[in-house]
Length: 64
Image 1 (cartoon, rainbow, N blue to C red):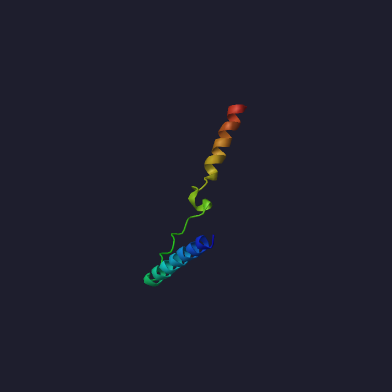
Image 2: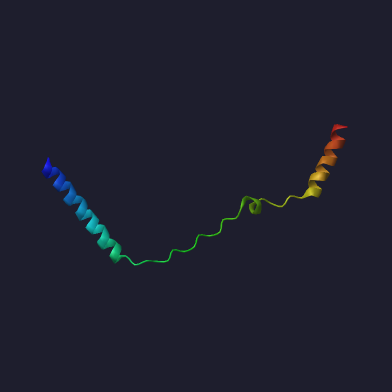
C-alpha cells in the first residue's frame, strides 16, 4: 500500500512542477475590456404616447 501512496505523491508532484514551468513560460497579456452591454431600457423602442392615446380613442368609439 505504501508504494501506491508514494507513486501518487510522485505523480502529483510531477504535475505540479509541469504547471509551475508553464506558468513561468506564459507572459501576462492584457485582456480586452468587455463590450458594454446595453440595458433593457435602452434596447426597447421609444414609446409613442400619442399613438397609444389615438388607439384608445378609436377603441372607445368601437365599443360605443
